Length: 152
DNA sequence: GCCAACGTTGGC
DNA sequence: GCCAACGTTGGC
Image 1 (spheres, rainbow, N blue to C red):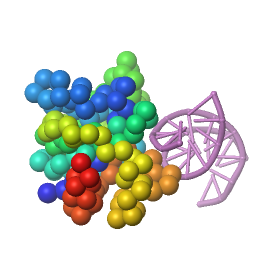
Image 2 (cartoon, rainbow, N blue to C red):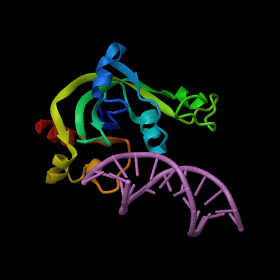
Image 3 (tube, chains in turn purple, blue, brown):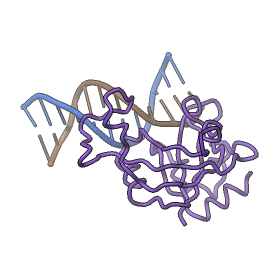
Image 4 (spheres, chains in turn cyan, green, red):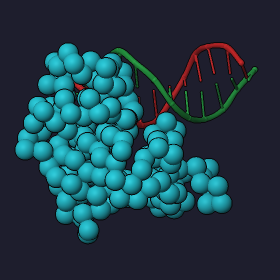
C-alpha cells in the first residue's frame, strides 16, 4: 500500500465535486508532466490512499482523502483537439499521457492548511512544503501520512 | 496581480 | 548539447 498527494484547484475540481460524481469516482485527467505521469502509469496501485490537496485558492491545504480506483491507463483527452489538454504529439498507438481513476473516501473534518504543514518540523521532509516544489502528484511516506492525519 | 521556481522549446 | 526565452505553477 502506497500513499500519495494530488493537487487540484477547487475552483476547477475540488473534493466536493469528487463526492458528487457518479460512483464518487472520476478520472484524474489533464496531467501533462512527465514525473507525475510516470507515477500514475507505473507506481499507483489500486487501493492506494491519496490526500486531496486544494491548490491555488484562498486556503491551500489538504481537504480530504480518496483512493485509487483504477490503475494507470492512457489519458484520451490528449487525443481530442477540442479538449483543453489536447496534445498533438500524443499518439493513440503510443500514448504519451496517462491517468488513474480516483474514488472519494471522505472529507477531513477540517482543511489541514499548507501553513500548518510548513510549521510542523516533523514534516520538513515533505516534498509539498519544500521551496519551489511544483509537482502536482507526489508520494507521501507512511510516517508523514500518519503525522498529517493526527493533525486533523 | 506579483513573482520565484522550474519545465519546455527551439535556435544555434 | 547549450542556453535564452517563454510558459506554467502556485503561494502570497
